[in-house]
Amino acid sequence: MDTFKWESVEKQIHSLIKNYGYGEIRTPAFEETGLFIRGVGKDTDVVSKEMYSWKDQGNNNLTLKPELTAPVVRSFIQHNLGRLQPINRLYYIDALFRRERPQKGRQRQFHQFGVEAFGSENPEIDVEVISVAYNIYKSFGIDGMVVKINSIGSPNVRPKYLKELRVYLKPFSKRLCKTCNHRLDTNALRIFDCKNQNCQELLDEHAPLISDFLSDDDKKHFEKVLQLLDHLGIPYLLDFKLVRGLDYYTRTTFEITSSELGSQDALCGGGRYDNLVEQLGGEPTPAVGFAAGMERLLIVLEESLQDLRKSIDIYIVILGERALPEALKIAHNLREKLNLTVVTEPSQRGVKAQMKEANRQNAKFAVIIGENEIKSKFVAIKDMTKGEQVEVKITSILHYFSNLN
Ligand code: AMP
Image (tube, rainbow, N blue to C red; front, side, top):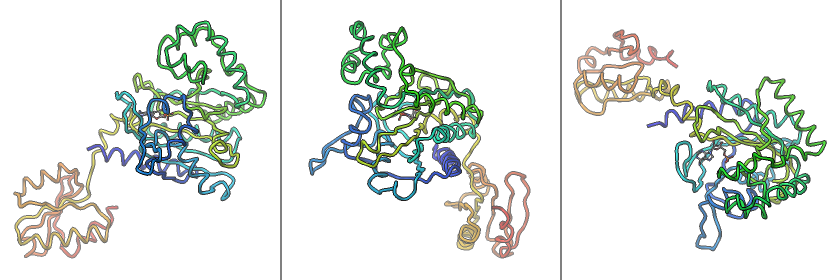
């Protein structure tokens, strides 16, 4: 029932992203499991708890894609896209799968749109990617959105930071949940993703923040990102705890939230991932992107989309069996010659029932064809919005509707 809402939202997203010069990429529904383990990270929630994985008859480990950056990177490497042009701007709208507890705004099969820009480490590309997301939401008239932003620096600053974080957390390890206790030894950064209140409180108290460990280059990069955001008038909130739940991020991380969403308030999230292409076997290629939940956008748009009723151009009201062949011919010509949406009455009902159906389908016009009309070679055309009705010669119907599109 909601597909027309999806279509209309998707159309706007395709068109806006294309305005920035991004081209659509489509990847398969599943990939080798190893891609996500290597790309997303084995201690992330996505990989450790949420993947739908299986072995096929050839003993290959496969997984329904739980996120889209790793598949896009795999494809970028496999098809050598980096050789074609220095900067590759790609985008997608696609379905993905995560074994999560379903709730409002959180499904096991859901959809994301997103962009990935390969080939530049310059802060202007970070800002371009953030502004694609921001301007899409703005174009839908979304209020109450906040761009949260942080820099988690380049990977070489991470070991020092993680050491400090462990030193801080170790004495409180009993207060950490079981998963985070494990993460403390394997991948302490992921403790920031934990939804357990005790773990979050511990981090809130006096945990060291990665922002205090950035190199001078990281700081310069981040300052430039913020400057350009200021320049473009994109408001943001610094959030030094924003590390994002996937292992591949470097430097800029960001999230856009909406106060209209309730507890699952993230509309989209993204950031820079300068090492992922190389890590997955490609040439070193800096990159940045974001992924945004379609269902969450539709939740926020729910009210404004109510007005967007599905509509057709013409409903053909057919009165009497002998009018049927001529009516079908007229409908065919209108579709073929004028590319109009034309629906014909399928059962021989009375005129009242058929006009009611035309209304229900939100038709702009009803063309009424009966046996008398066939004899007189005229049909009645009713403008359903204005309520006005005119007689038009059968041979002039195409001309009458030729200005409709
Ligand atoms: P992530 O890939 O986890 O960074 O998520 C990016 C965006 O996808 C989030 O901000 C949400 O809008 C959306 N999202 C993530 N997981 C789900 C889910 N299970 N159901 C619906 N939307 C989701």
